Image 1 (cartoon, rainbow, N blue to C red):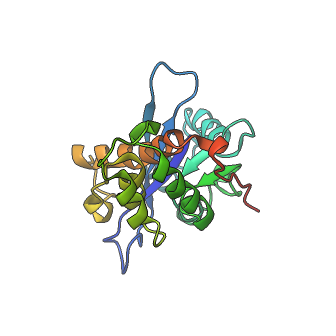
Image 2 (cartoon, rainbow, N blue to C red):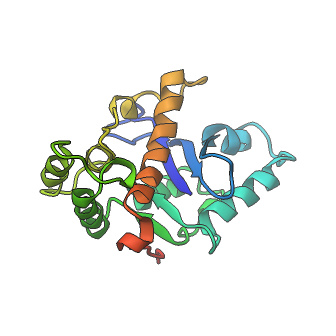
Length: 212
């Protein structure tokens, strides 16, 4: 599973100044196809602002979040997961299911996992196939290996496709979200899992850690 958080960068000074607004969950386990669920955290956690009575659906939602974030049989794959987890905890301090450190994670933004992913991109083509002669795959990987960059850079090196990050700084507190925002949020969650699968996951040497 991948968990990601998008926040309103326009709510204050600097990126991510606003509360975590949308949680992106890319779930790929015993499903007919990869599914990305967008969880509206502002709506799900915002009931406290208008009522003192817990909604009837909240227990099921909290249970689902707890399993996805802490269950031992779920591996969480993402990019910058520690920052996302901290942002969610700070945004919703009263939500017990966000209060602890997440379970086992593979954070592709860590320097070790970045190096492993880029090293595997040298010998693997898009979606894990052999890179055709003159494809530019090795060149992309070589350029990306010079420094740890963003998810778009890693996606370009491993999958051959960059991610347009312009909507990252859009208004994530607006409701309803634009279709382009929803598409961006889903892609932002799916890309790390695609990268993880393309290079062979844990068998390729990617490191899973348990925070705390």
